[in-house]
Length: 640
Image (cartoon, rainbow, N blue to C red; front, side, top):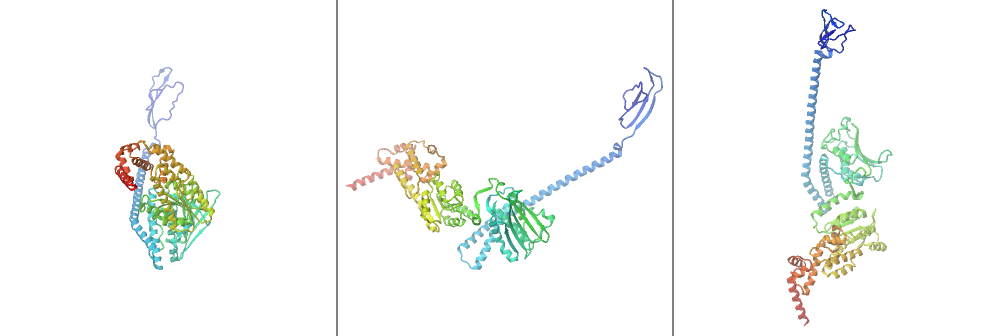
């Protein structure tokens, strides 16, 4: 039997095997005890002991633990060092963002401060251009001042756009536009600089017309920044070119490539990846008087990416640089909120549309009275629209549309008092537009003036047949157009007044017999039904506009606009006026008191009835009775 002290807890009897086996014994010091054992009896023999030492493995030795401690301290130091570096980087990033925000805030504040005086400068220059007669030199100086003032305003707007981009608040409004006139318009601003520095300025295009869905103002800003950047780093007698190419690839969507190439100083490869970063300036301008803010190319990249496009640069130091923009054709990659279907920019209207919108909005909001009539001007020729607009804007609120389809959308929103439309237009011509308006119950009453270059009696007959109120041939006198508009509005107003001054039956008869204002059969039936219902329910004190709308089977807004257009009064005003006129007839009979008349015609308060009566007839009911008696006596005396 045997026993390993330090490992075994009890003696082990080995009956047949005279050996002991141990495995996986931990390192350390042990004592092995052995006694003789025969059969079932323990022999009285001495106990034999043996000292055993199992050596410690190297990985558990003291020097191994020293190594472990050193490694732990090293890892701990690395972790602390990494955390320190990360904290430092975060602090530097926050500081950089803070400095960037301070720069942007500074630019933004300065921009806002400059807008007001710059607007006044531009306004003064525009007034000088319109009113003053200057020499050729004076005109050139004035034109240069005006152009550079507009450029300053454009730069200020770019800074404000950049602020919006940083705040993720810049929203595009894309329209289907020809990019070539936009590029030509930008190049005009660099012609003088190119001539002065003898720089060759070129424009190459693959097609005569390249339509793109873009935000025209911001894409113009991109082109201007790229060209300005090219001129900044191109020496005198150099070359700057702008190319626009439309490529149709089988493996990808149709794309348009816009490239600006220069023969300037170039950009090193290590700086090309950072050239579009905000406030980055790696190159020195050729001329010392040219400085940059470092946001131009960053703004270009942001705007291009908002268009779901890309912008890249290829450059060789000492040979020049090429900036290439890739834009997708179509509008599938834009959201519905970003797409402006109402505007189709072409070569003509691009140059005036922005200014026209600004003029219309400013004048309408600041100069015109609230009740100024609204004129819808429909013509596909931007110059004609601008010409007519400038002559109407002082008296009317003018809304523009480029064709019949656009006009229908504008009519649904603005509800014009008069429509002036051209005959020949794309998508929907003037005849089709008039026909649709006359067959639409909500627009059948609106006066329409037809403008056309065709002078045949057949065309005039066709226009009048479909419902045009007036037919004016081109070329026409603006004064004549103004007279036509004024006459239509005056006739309509006189019709309202005449209609309001007669009894119920006479109103209907006079209304339907007007020959100088186009009134459709549906409008006649509508007015007849309207007046009959008012006459039937005039005694009801609980009579409401909602009841009238339910009876006419119209929505409140549609009914209001229709009655307002046909009578010049709101439904409430019409009902009130009708009650007062009926009251005047009852008072004339002398059979009822003022209170009885008021209650019979749906007035719950005789005092309110008296105020309404005086408002219409300028005298109170009591004064009216006395005046009526005096006139009757005067008639009796005259008859004698």
